[in-house]
Amino acid sequence: MSRRSRSPSPGSERLAKRPRLEYSPLTPEDYKNGVVLAPMVRSGALPTRLFALKHGASLVWGPETIDKALLHTTRTVDPDTGFVSYNGKSKAIFTTHPIEKPYLIFQLGSADPEIAVQAAKMVMDDVAGIDLNCGCPKPFSTHGGMGAALLTNPDLLCGILSALRQALPPHISVSAKIRLLPSQEDTLKLVERIVNTGISCLTVHCRTRNQRMREAAQIERLREIVQFVEGMGRGIAVIENGDCLGWEDAKRVREVTGAHSAMIATAAEANPTCFSPRPLADLELTFIPNYIRLSKYIKNHWASTKFCTSQFKGAHLEAQRADLTRVRKALMSAKSYEDMDEYCKPWNGEEEWRAIVDAIEARGGRPQRSAQAMQTQVAGGADASSAQSQPQAEPSSQAVDSALQSQSRSTSSAASPAPSVHTPPNAPLEADPLLAPRAPMHTVLMPVPPLVSSEDAQTPTPAPASSGNSREGLVL
Ligand SMILES: Cc1cc2nc3c(=O)[nH]c(=O)nc-3n(C[C@H](O)[C@H](O)[C@H](O)COP(=O)(O)O)c2cc1C
Image (cartoon, rainbow, N blue to C red; front, side, top):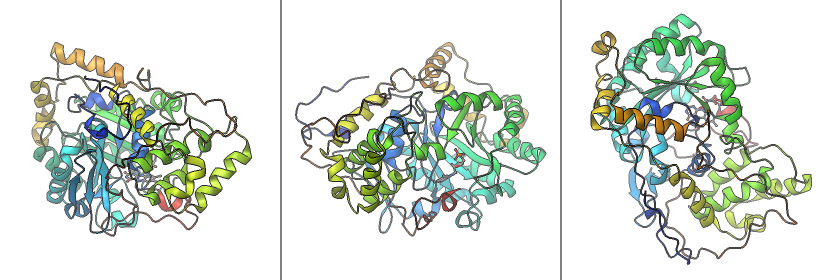
């Protein structure tokens, strides 16, 4: 991988032209041995995904986007920066950058195979995989037959997955995220059908549709499901979701469930550095200013930045309570980035951007796999009937094996974190710890389209409660 030479003059270079990642399409193996960021409407914004990747998330799911809403968007690419924006009537409904593409799973909400395929084809050049949301219990999703409603309509659920698998090119992986059904037997029956559609990965949110988030996830039910899927011999990944707290906790979760990876939502919403063995603490001082600087630099919509930062809650170790309170108060009353001047100046988000790009590039992409291997992976999926009788073999050529081993080393966050991903330990607090070391100001602002502020009428999103911090309104 070629490394870019540093320009001494910040702002004079075309930042997003940098990433030239070489990577192979996702296979089921790429979903394994990792800790991944869950799909989160509102909270899974681009800056959060970028920080999650910087701090060790092996893959990141984008927030659920309804297929019909996507069809009404126009895709724009900033020629200088490469930022990609899917613009709805009034706002962007999804924004991404090529740097995250090898690790980005786009989650669709759908209740129609044809529309799902159309929507997936619209975004497939910007993502590594397409995931179908089969678990959202909120009325805005279920009333259209999407989300958790699919759990009781397995024909439609599997019809959408099969259609996606058949219509999308082999290099776009297809996956599904489901919830548990009340009965284990029914869950296994559903899982069998889903696996036979040829998906690469199944995420199981270990709660039932009617379970509230405050109730513990039933992760002990997953072991049997994992064994069942493994017994089907297709080698697909099963990801545990529900109550995983971070990198360390993922070990426990995987031990209890036998799952190949763990997916984190709430804990990552509170601390996007939780994917690291050494997550940041005292976030008001160590993380929030950098998050805001980066968000301003990439022109993330202020409303989105404010919402996400208001969710951050880390351990408090060294900071003085008064310092933390100062930041929180400023954040609560801020109406724009400028209102955070006191805490975020200098606005050197470019440095954070460089750090993120470096961390992601340092992973080295994914090893190239043979076209034959990719073909083998996909061929088993599309035809459910033939797949049922013929368990699919994983790619087995020597080259592919060694590539997989090397990938497993580089993305094995739960077993051993990617050596290139560093989370700085909490720096010793200085007199005013919110002020980062001075760096030249970036004078040329990148013309990045605004990010979704989550209020686009086309894309129903859970409204935050009046405090802006309530969990109840946001649990999908
Ligand atoms: C703010 C928020 C937004 C969410 N949005 C989505 C979504 O877009 N799609 C989805 O499948 N699940 C969504 N979920 C559910 C999570 O992905 C996850 O299944 C659930 O929170 C359980 O994981 P946890 O115990 O780690 O929080 C959301 C959860 C939260 C907290």
